[in-house]
Amino acid sequence: MSTCLDITNLSAVLPNGERVLRSVSLSVLPGEVRALVGESGAGKTMIGKAVLGVLPSSVRIVEGDMLLEGEDLGKLQPKARRTLIGARTALIPQDPLTALNPSRRIGPQMTDRLVRILGWTVEKADQRVRQLLDEVQIRDPDRVLRSYPHELSGGMRQRVLIAAAFAAEPRLIVADEPTTALDVTVQKQILRLIAALQREHGTAILFVTHDLGVVAKISQKVSVLYAGKVVEEAETATLFAAPQHPYTRALMAATPRYTDPFASLKPVDEAVLAGLAAEITAADKAWRRPHG
Amino acid sequence: MLLQRFLIRLLTMLITLFGVAVVVFVVIRVAPGDPIAMMLPPGATDADIARLRALYGLDKTIVQQFFIWLSGVVRGDFGTSISLRQDVLGLVFNRLPATLELAIVALLMAVALGGTTAIIGARERGTAVEAGIDIASGAALSIPDFLWGLVLILLFGVLVPIFDISGRVSPQLDLPFVTQFYLFESILRLRLDLTWDLLKHMLMPAVALALPLAAIISQLLKQSLKEVLDLDYVVLARVKGFSETQVILREALKNAALPTLTLVGVQFTFLIGGTVIVERLFSYEGLGNMAIDAVINRDLPLIQGIVLVFALLFVLINLAVDMMYALLNPRLRRG
Image 1 (cartoon, chains in turn green, orange):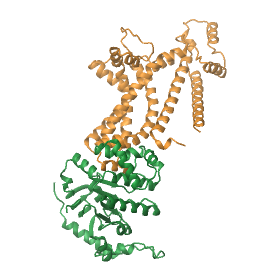
Image 2 (cartoon, one colour):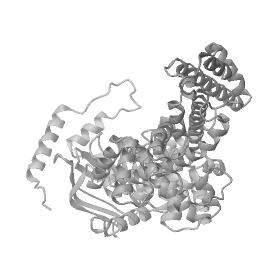
Image 3 (cartoon, each protein chain N blue to C red):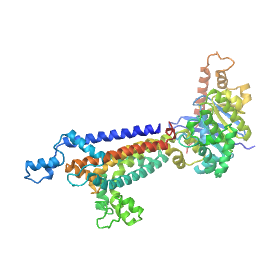
Image 4 (tube, rainbow over the protein chains, first blue to last red):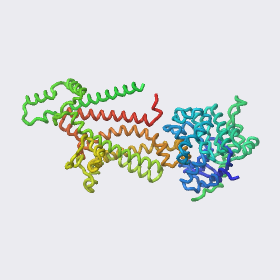
């Protein structure tokens, strides 16, 4: 089976030459959910942004290939790449409060890609969006479509964004910590919604999160990242049953459990971090910045 | 609620205008210079002077004079110009349209030029194009409007004489206009030959007034755009497949325009203030030009009338800006 997303050897640097992505390789099969897990600054969001072509201007990709359904994103002209990404991918952003334009109504924000990029008629796009709003259990689509973002709650806005992401039947969705900014009670509902829509539509998802509990619930495969480097990758079940890398084991040990609410929070072990630092240094020594 | 806010607003406007009236009334009477002395031929007797003073009410105390004038203003009577011996309100309304046309054309130019360069600069952020725009706007801003006027006169009035440097319209032309808004009326009447003649007179003063404002708009709007362009909803729009230009125009511009709009409101009042000297420079027959004559002649009623009309204009501009602000920002519309 051909892969939906194939990233090989992707490295990206900051202007000072520091690598923020260190020869990252990973792939996502059609209809598969791959979790990217790691602490803040591990580069998990950066990978998602690299795929979608929205890296900050300070970050530059220096080597590696990204294939979206066999098309080499690095070799396409900017306009062709933009259109391809617009047609085949979507983003579920982290913070629903800032991801909707405050001065535009919800309706046009949901339909604009369908109409203006994919060339659908306005009626068809409207129908489609209402269908998706129904799937994310929004019962009064008329009101929601007419609303401005500030008139909706955070959970409602995230539902709107999820519906908009699935509306164009993308092959790949990048979900960038889609539950982090929400209330704990809402988090569960939203996660369940994403999982349900994913199964229903058979969409591949690159699911960025720092929450191992979320990883266990939603993904089939996991890549564990540290300092922009994939330190371990495995099937989700395998990873939880037998984590190989000491960092993965330390992360799991550090995850708070509901079964023991009085246990104190544990940081990741110092020795593990020292080992990781050595690993990163060795990798950087071996790496030669490609020219050109 | 809305009515209450409107009434409060109206009251503030009236208090502002009253304050302006008091200050101007007192200042021009305390300042040196006597309108009567300038009207009389040499050798006039003290009795002549006293009679004329009484005629214009200048023999009374300032407080008395003020309330006599104010009671006239309330009834729409702004008094009679001392130097021109005509009704002040008529004189002002005869000249006001010329100044308004000039200011509006200058404002449109400034918005068009400043807006375009801001959008291009934001689109090409971090490149030589943006640096070029920064340098140009820095230069435009550091030269005041009247100096731009002189530069333009030298360039396009003297060296390459393509524009008229003096007046509002060529004097030999027959003007069929019923209003004083010559430019707007010529467009409405489709007398484009007259429009062209009016523009040839108006373009240079308008550009002189517009350049500094264009630079301010360009710098502020570009900065706001660049800030908005890093926000999440703009990133999302890029992922949807929209080009940078589409992203700027559809997602960023409206939200980035809010701080610029407030500033343009304030700056537009400065621009109108700038018409006083620029009109003089180009012998453009507007209110500002008349204001300078009024001051030179110590024409107290005329100065008061002109200043009060300018003040009213400024207050109305502020009101318009606030209303546009609410229109652009849906979060302000309710409550």
